[in-house]
Length: 171
Image 1 (cartoon, rainbow, N blue to C red):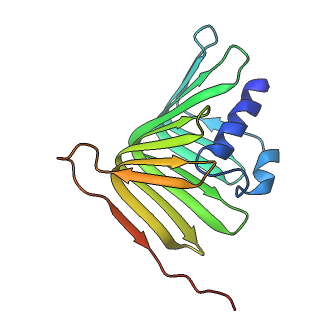
Image 2 (image 1 turned 90 degrees about the vertical axis):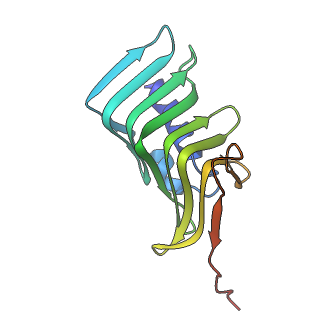
């Protein structure tokens, strides 16, 4: 189904550049589990609700609700995951893992950006240990460039916290 292939491409890009994504994720089927689904092909919207789990290879998204916006050609434009903390994980070829969570996640397929809002957290892990963590009211992650921007939203909402663990340099 063309819709599922488009979703696959977006999921690969959702939180990491495809250069670093687990290379065999691309060949895995997409599985969406939910308590209910509503697909409106005229409006180009698919809504999955109730303990939604989307998996493809090492990619896993959990949310209370996932909304997919797509074109008449079935290409995904935007994925919105919401919940009392929606989460995203992906294993990378370099044996690192990307993990994100927030009450609201929006992936823009056109700009290749992931916006995390409301209790946002983005982590990179190696061997189960954090090597980078960012906590903020808002986090923007550019999936192509690997660029992260975190901010406190408006001046009253608070500060950001970033933790970078020292890494051993191989000689």
